[in-house]
Image 1: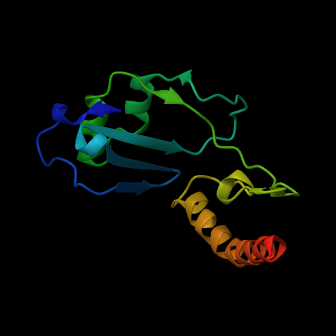
Image 2 (image 1 turned 180 degrees about the horizontal axis):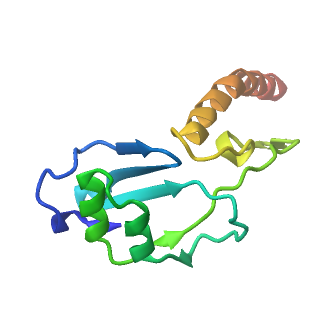
Length: 146
């Protein structure tokens, strides 16, 4: 993540940006109302076993991995001082998504790799599927109170 003012104004489009290449891709987007630019650089690897959210990365290695890519990617990496590594692991879905009055939705209950906002899309789909059940439950509660 870098401060947006480290890049010329308008360097990145105000939307999410995606660059694709063989075995890797790069996503960037603004945070905090445009004050920060965050990026996620994905490289396919078969030898990763460690699970961590705060494993320090080597920014020089990251720059080398994406050398010769799009100018925006190179500029963003040049302005970055540090990075972190975290692997993507596939998980089995939970066998039960509810417990009494609580229901998990999205990738909290059927996890998926974080591509194309599928976890959020599944949360919307789950909520849509659960909405009729909530209405039935509310009706039962109303009838019980009569």
